[in-house]
Image (cartoon, rainbow, N blue to C red; front, side, top):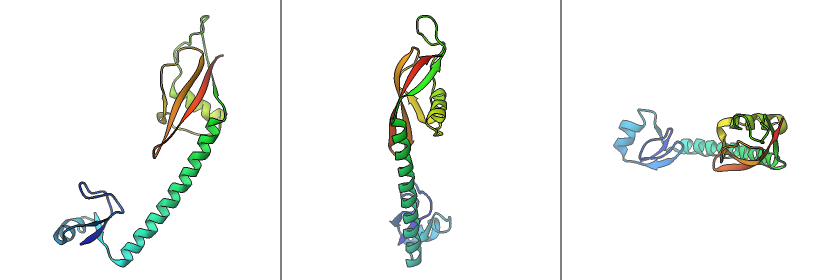
Length: 148
């Protein structure tokens, strides 16, 4: 029997997926627990519509991400930090400071948890950070630490 999964089911498949299972498993477990619906022509049509809407959302989101990536690649961010006489920073630059600089200088709100810095930033100079947008899409952002 073919069913359309409503939710992810371990060892069977993900949501909105068409799978073939035994009749008893579908009628006694999947359908009563609202994990799946029978693959009738009307349900298949609804599935197609859901997938079409999902694809459009993903395309729109990908276009927005590409726009943000292009804007972030335009130029290096400038981060001010208090320094000693030798050029060393008091403390270090964090992802929170980078997120704040992106918001102020580029106009985009990016969650600080998505920003990773390759190595510790303890001195003035140019560095790179990686921003992970999810869906396998990430970009590197250059930033320069200057004395305040």
